[in-house]
Structure formats: C-alpha cells, structure tokens
Length: 95
Image (cartoon, rainbow, N blue to C red; front, top):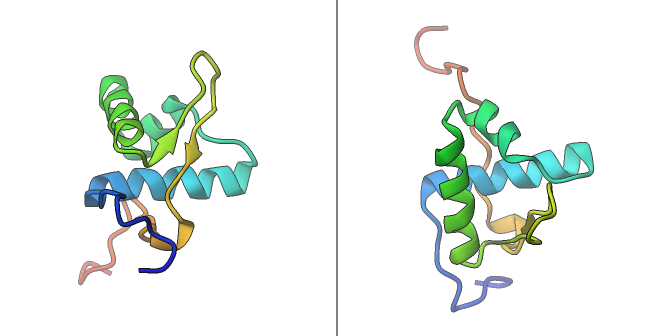
C-alpha cells in the first residue's frame, strides 16, 4: 500500500473512528480536539477517552507533547482513515 509504512499496525474500527474524529476536528477547528471534545462526541467516560488516546499513542498512530493541551498530531496518512460515523443518526428502515 502506498503511503502506509509496512511496520504500521492496523487500527481497530473503534480506533479508526477516534483517528477520523481527531483528523476532521483538527481540519474544521484548526486545532486538535481536547479529550473532553472526544468524550462528548463518542458519549463515553473520561477514562475511556484517555485510555484510547494512550493506546493510539502507544501504537504509533498519534503523537502528543507532554503537558501541552490539544497537542495531538496524527501520524497515520489521512487517506487510510475511515469515514467518521455520525452518532445518533439512523440510516436504516426507520426513515
């Protein structure tokens, strides 16, 4: 695959959604999201968001500057990110 390092670990669907959110939020707001932004979007607890961020960093998908808020930098090529799923929107037969 072009642009993807052979040593890069693939991410899970949930991790992909967080990466897609971080990417889109950063493009829209011209700064990375805070953990509280992710907590509100994904409707999860603060520890859940923090654990996901730590996991993404450990897996080499993002980089952060210690002690600097909103310092998340995505290290995954944008073209390898999934489309962000909009939560709460039903697209099934219920329409």
